[in-house]
Length: 153
Image 1 (tube, rainbow, N blue to C red):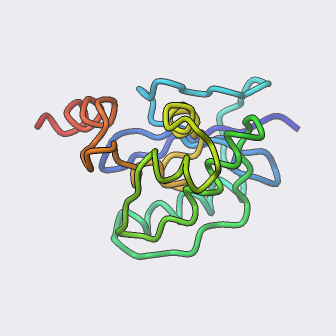
Image 2: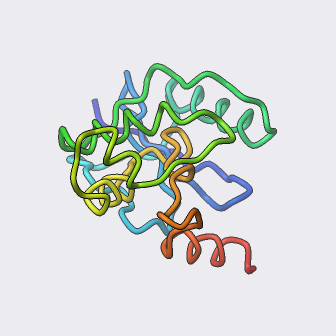
C-alpha cells in the first residue's frame, strides 16, 4: 500500500502530511529544510483515516485546545534521532528546554548532535521541536529565520 499525502493549510503555512494505512510518518512545512527526509517510497495524493485524524488534531491544536498526542505517530529515523524525538515528547505544553539539557538527560556529550536530530524531526508540531531553545534561552538561528519568513516580522 503506497504512502498517502495530504496538504493541510495551517495558520503558519501549508503542511504536507504523509501516512501509511497505520501511522502518520511525516508532517513537514512545504519550505522546511528536511522536507520529506527519510521517505523511502513515493506518495500519492489523497486522504485516509490517519490523515483525517491528523488534520483533526491540528485543527484542535491551532484553536488552542490541548489534545493528547495521537498514538499513530511513527517517525522514520536513526535510533539516536528516535531517542531525541521521544525526549521531545516529554516537554509539557507551554514549556521549553534547551539542546544542552536534552543532551545531558540522554547522556550525550554533544548538544549539536541533539540539534541535528531535532532539526530532522519529521513530525513538526506533533513532536514539539519548537519547544527547544538555544543555550541562551532564545530561538535558534534556524527558528528565527523560519519565524521571520512565515510572519514577516
